[in-house]
Image 1: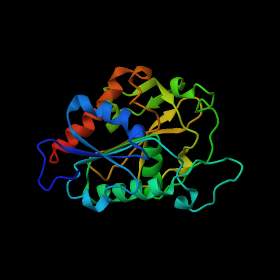
Image 2: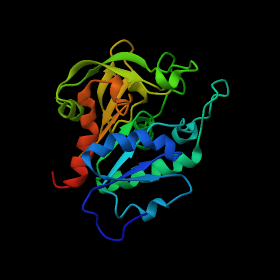
Image 3: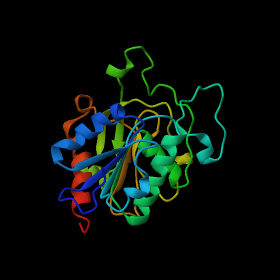
Image 4: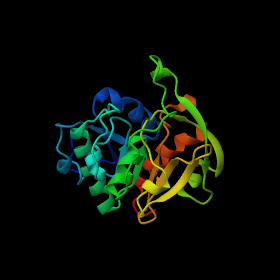
Length: 237
């Protein structure tokens, strides 16, 4: 349901392929008491939401169709593509960027931000997702370096090295990064881009890892959700 008048709580839009997919992200936002609105392909039209949206949380999910960044799917890779989700995510993100609405992107969300900003992706990266049958309960782990002075460092309280989780098979290196974005975290062992932010917007931060899986990351990464809600509630900050 979209309200006709402004809610006392900031409205955070959470586009996802299914309600179930959105649940862990909505739960991660809940301690900071926003109004979370899950948007599904074929559901509430994005243009009915934009007037009321105070923040946008782009979450994990299917692979982005490579035609979005000017190439064709590699048939050897078996990409899991959901074009209806692409339409939803890109429309909401483009509107949020145009209006300078706060955005946090997670995993696929980072990739959407990069592609929407003019970057590309590597269609398959080995060693960053557990493809075993129990993969849903066991993420890969690796270290990343967070740039001091970045918005991400400010949110989590420090730069430097930290261990994070990993559940993706697509991503980007510096060669694929959109020129308008800044890389603010790298994989220590492989140089993979692990966080991006926009220097041209008030608060646009995206990470390749999964802070909604709170038991797999240092506690301070929950502040990403707190920061999104705070920025959405305080548009002049």
